Every structure is written in structure tokens, then in C-alpha cells.
Length: 424
Ligand SMILES: *Cc1c(COP(=O)(O)O)cnc(C)c1O
Image (tube, rainbow, N blue to C red):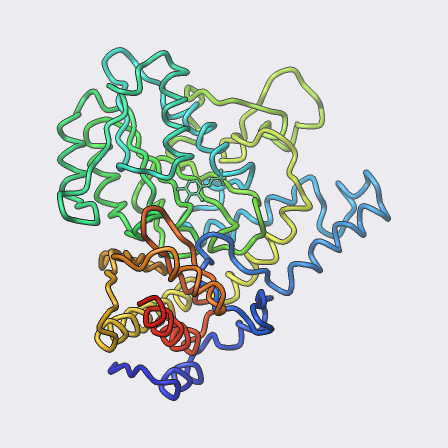
């Protein structure tokens, strides 16, 4: 398709957008009385208009039924989380039994590490990407210390090459082979939060397992953004967060994926709680834990139903639209955004930025600003564009295909241009 940087052309793309009806099903924050151009669906997705009703239903059931709501609410609470497992499994390319919605992301990674990071004197090292999201770094470091090892000679970071802004798959694989039989675990963000790169999860998973390590994925920026095939790729485990691309609401629940090959293996230790014990016998309150041999065995506490309500509302929208349609629009809208950025770069002599996201990408373009920096970011915010700023000089633009329009991309380009001209 030959793009044009005109309002007319952008509007034409919107008219032909199969998902155009969904924009109106979300609430947009307003800036200067107008809907914001929202690029932060990778940080906190917008609120679906259906979410409120799902929450109200739980509040009403609670008011009318009290404790009886556990079993007699229209959507009973004791198994509320199970309603989220199947649609979530579809997003992950997983089987329903491999998925349990529970806790929050970093918490889940700790729980999964309890099962899949059991270092020995010989096999104890962890491979991750350099400059991983801070929570993942703290999580890994504290796990290593918890097991009595020294993070300095235990955590091995795969670096980007000098002068490059992305990781090369061959460098990840080479590092895995180099660490070899000392490698206990590979844990990487499936989509990097900073540069938006999609890692080759299939190749890396196989490489890690070939040297005898477990391979897990942090899918914070991947779930609801890119196509995932966790079961086919044979990933050992994964976790994600739902408040980014999945639009479930601030700080909302995460979930775990555990590959089916591990589910019946009772030799794998877990940190257990009553809700992980088999539902058929849970309320007999027996002293022994009984595994259901599903991902639910990792569940510890009874589900926070109020927060799962808007999460379920959002998953129903994902089930209705499907990832293939979202990905189809995503590819075009991100390519259009890239085109608009390139046009502004050509048109404005003083424009000085660089897209650092590699071609293996999802919804996000990370733009490195040479020189302009924070004032430009502030200008964008004041003029109706919500982006985010990452030190030292990157803005991340994630036009979520569910609710962003092509017109947004065009308008953003015009505001950016004005901002650059004014800052010089
Ligand atoms: C957003 C994000 C987190 C956030 O962790 P929470 O436990 O949900 O606060 C962690 N890791 C990565 C890679 C993220 O992008």
C-alpha cells in the first residue's frame, strides 16, 4: 500500500478499518476537551465501556447474596477465575489446563521460579537480556540470593552489539551454548519493554532446553499484542500482565502458563495454598494438598473477583475480535505511524530522531530523540498526545489496534512537527 501523509488518506484508512467500531467501546481521556491520542496502551490499556457492568454485577451479587455469592451468584465466585482461563489460553497459544489467572506479574514470576529455578552447585546460572525491566532484574537477583548464590556470577546478560539497538537471536543462542551445562534457566521478556523488539521465542526456547535448562517468558508486553504459541514452542512457563494490552484495569491480575508436560510431575516443588488443591475435594479441608495436575495447582488464594470482573469483560472483547484481526490492523497502523514519522523527518530540517524498534515488532515503536528530548515530550502531552518517556531519551508509541485510529497517527504527526519547529 502506498501511504500518504494527509488527513484525507488517514480518514480513508479509518473508513476501511474492519475494527473501526471498537474505538467507541472504550473511554478516552480528554486533553483540552478532546479525546487524547493514546499511545500508552502498552502501559495501561483504556477502559472498555463494558467493564463497569461486570464490576457492578459482582457488587450487586455481594449485596444481595453475601457469602452465598461464592456458589449462587450468576457468575459464581469460587471458580470465577476459570472463566478467564480459556480466552487467555487462546491469546497465549496454550491449552486451557496450562493457564491459571492469578496474582500479579512479578509475584507470579517468583512463584514460577520456586518451581523452575532450583539451582545446584553445577547448574545454577540464569540468562536474561541486558537491561531487563527493573522488576525482573530485582526478582532474579533476589531469587539468586535467596538460594545463596552470588548474582554477579550467576546472572548472565545477553548484550546488544556495539552501536545496535536490538538483540540478535544468534547472540542469545551463542550465550546459551557458552553457558551450557551450567545453565539452569533462561528468562527473557518476550517483547522488550524498551525497544519493542519481539524475541524469537521458538528458537531461544529450543536452544535453552537443548542444553538442559528451563525456559520461561515474561509476556508483559507480548500478551494481547503479538501472536503467541507457547504450547507449540514448548515454553516451560510464562507469566504476563493484563493491564497493558489486555485493558483489564490498573494493577490487575496476571496469570501463569505452565507447559502441560510439567503438570502431572509431582516432583516439581511449588509454593502452595488451599485454592491450588483440587477443587473436587478442596472444601473437605483435608490436611494434604491434592494437585489437579493443571496450572490451577499453582494458585494460592481464592480469586480477587472484583478485579477479575473487568478483566473478564476485556477478554470477552478479545474473544469476539480475535488476535488475527487485531494483528492485521496492528501491522498496518504501525507501518502507517512509521511512515508518518519518516515523512516528518524529511519535511522538517531540524527533526533529529531515530526509530530503534527492529523489524521484529508488535504494536510499539520506540523513538530515540537526539537533542530534542523532554521538552518535545511535554509539548506532545500538552497538545493531546499521551506517550511515555523512558530515560535517557526515548519515547514509546504504541497505537493499540483495538481503539487507535489512522487519523490519530496523522494528527500525531502534525503535532510532532509543530513541537519540533517550536523547540528550535
Ligand atoms: C510492566 C512490566 C512489569 C510489571 O510488573 P508488575 O508485577 O505487574 O507490577 C514487569 N515486567 C515487565 C517486563 C513489564 O513490562
